[in-house]
Image (cartoon, rainbow, N blue to C red):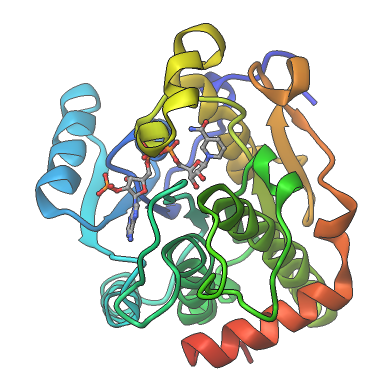
Length: 299
Ligand SMILES: NC(=O)c1ccc[n+]([C@@H]2O[C@H](COP(=O)([O-])OP(=O)(O)OC[C@H]3O[C@@H](n4cnc5c(N)ncnc54)[C@H](OP(=O)(O)O)[C@@H]3O)[C@@H](O)[C@H]2O)c1
């Protein structure tokens, strides 16, 4: 792999279509910006119209020829996920080269999505599970398409509480985030196994941004205090995901993160995830649960 890989190493993406969830701020914005700068058509899938349009405007200021557009997506509302998938499929004739499941929330107080799921589990995992499933036809009909899901080093502290996935009996904000980020990895590896089993050339890949200063830390004061000393800039934090989404040597089931100390910062490299993230029994169980809860079935 290229040493000190940066966004300048992204190949020309002319003709490719990408969706980036949560692209109005932080890492997602930098991902969308970099993809648009390499000539991909980029859909910024964001929940807030003003923020989504402002992000598009900013990208177009920098790259006047950019093909960037905002589409409404609230991952905490399955009806919104269905609407985006339907509208995207209609507008883009069933072609999707790169889906980046990036949006996320961290350590927020207990709350529920419109459909009654705990906010982290519902937004970070179930929303993306449903989105990917609803876009699956477009993805697998596009040669060598990629699904990239953004996890976190925090997945190592996660456990899937199958008895209480929505934290109704015992809610712990950090634990709920860690569970959702472990779910992102279990989902990625299971999706890759399914692509392989079906003999498809589509790949599922995961990435994490290390410690990056963004709005994500809004509900965790200690991380905010440490941000100036440890956190890297969103442009750097975006690199592992950009690598996973575009580098030719990436393989299905790979996981990328920063190469520095404790994977907190630095240029992208292939990293290892926890043993628990490779538990195939848990992955299959989570898959079935996710299909039941969202009503989205992969076929
Ligand atoms: N920053 C880090 O150090 C770090 C570390 C590990 C992993 N990550 C992961 O990196 C990803 C990006 O986070 P970030 O650090 O860039 O944080 P961020 O700046 O807060 O960006 C998160 C994005 O997700 C969007 N979002 C939140 N809830 C949503 C919903 N219900 N529907 C649609 N979009 C929603 C936000 O939209 P609004 O602006 O409308 O809220 C925002 O665009 C997350 O998956 C996070 O878990 C980050």
